[in-house]
Image (cartoon, rainbow, N blue to C red; front, side, top):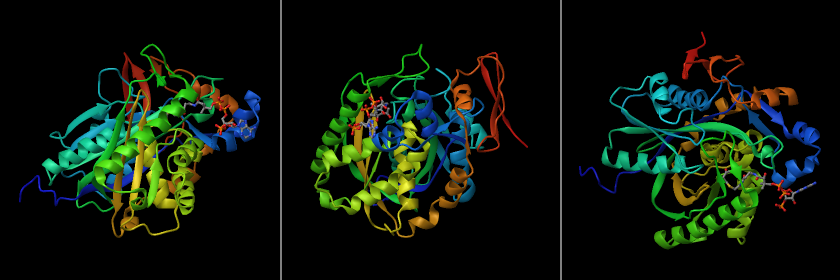
Length: 389
Ligand code: CAA
């Protein structure tokens, strides 16, 4: 068989996500910031945000997401590429992917790397993984996208914090969805959101960033429809990067204003998780995909989902997947329901403690984690993780 044959169907074989064990209801923030709660609940569309103790980081939650899919639906056999996408990595030089490689027990001939482009890196990883499997159809690629979104205290971005990790396995003959060969990309250098090396939290021009998101969506969809020869009628469902839910509703209305009203219900389904997790940067789009597939009361077999990825700075990509027959048998709805219904609400004081910069040397205070992996200490600048027995 020609290994570059276009008959090979490549896509998402399994997908799972994770987030913190802790969340804050935005009514707590509204009270302490003297803001009308309706601004957060309906103006921004956010109800809760995930908040993270210092012993959870993008590695521990990334591990939890990947471990879920590997335990339930895949073995580590034939995973020869691990891509770790993040903009809130733990080191300026060492790739976070090597920690995941070790904790997941992947084989030593598996190539690993960390990728960054704001919230877009997971989509770049998806593309690289697809091309890798196209060239090596018997092999698989694991993508882990993980971010913890922290804005400055008292800033307008504060109610749009959050965090989460998603893991998906890319293979031939996937069980969940096939990735289609066309997409629309739009790159445009702009200072809407960035985090210079000396800063822990990003600098953001919120209103500008929202305009950039909408412009990128317009440009990407124009280019997608042109290159695919499809029309709006061919897209059954939509999923978006969700910095905050209202952004998604606004962008969708602006670009697809004449779309069917049923889409609105499915947009709600796609945002169920992000409404209670908050922004998870590069993981966000794919957590929205889990949300749509796991919360909609419908069978979407053979339906086309249009996905919009946006990374500040900026790049956007609109692409599509087609869902497979029986896809719902391979979701992790029960595990995700368990994760989200067993979180603990924090008070304002705990939120303020979690928000402080992590210590640079010594033991890390231990809180409950979502998996049995924890960041135990930082010793001479090295992070020491431990499996809790
Ligand atoms: N009741 C109901 N609604 C109210 C209200 C009330 N009492 N008070 C205000 N609102 C509404 C406002 O009318 C507004 O709605 P519209 O946009 O529909 O007019 C909404 O609540 C927000 O109010 P403001 O515009 O006054 O909000 P703000 O200036 O405080 O900031 C924000 C909003 C710009 C989104 C800010 O939270 C922010 O900077 N967030 C971070 C940046 C971001 O998420 N950008 C998104 C695009 S960039 C991207 O996607 C990458 C990424 O992940 C960061």
